[in-house]
Image (cartoon, rainbow, N blue to C red):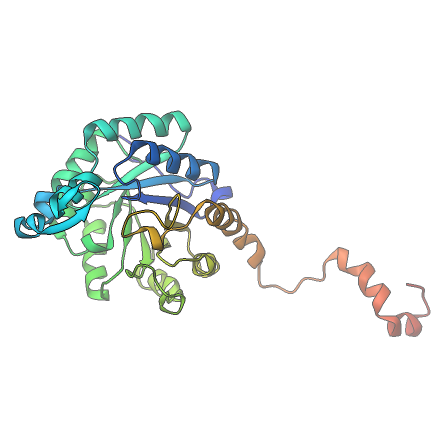
Length: 296
């Protein structure tokens, strides 16, 4: 079992970057593989999906209600069309190993978590919507795999209880600051929460963003985020509720590259007169040349 996985072991690739494919594959394995390739070629650490048993997660009344989609006329048909089963996850597992990128999925119910266990995934992910699902949290924490826990649409009381569950199971975790609006306005991102979470819980903190751009994600790294998660898409105009809050390939390449420059750019906070500043100072500070009687 992959129990000793440390997402921060490769210090050259911090933040650990999760490309959230989610349901943006639209039930199409061809689209799925293009998104996996996109994540790999952009330098992402991992890709992630979502797994749910629709009869557990949704009521029968809801599933039988009307919804027009390419799969039919009901919510059930639409949800089934977006849900991958064993055959598709076997292929995802095979293809990710072939390409050379890690993968995982966030389960929305206990049976889905048990289903995912067969793939010996390197880490687990808890969606913000599942933060208060204590049975599921205990099921996941009992595996003792590193878990990324999103904290959107929650209170400190909710986060306190979730953290206690993972600590009771001695399961390593990273908290993701998150705002669950799609897309999230920049002014709602509240990036300073990263420091707040770090101080309150004394654990690694990352950022799971749903904004349409990349500025808040970059700022999160300067605020101390050691992991990033962003939804990715081939085209924001594609069918799907998450597409508008996702980033396309050009944004993804830029975000991954620039996010991994942030920590070096932030520096030490100590004032240093760099050696390669010396000739510039000698050239521009004419008054010091005159006083000292030397030539620049």
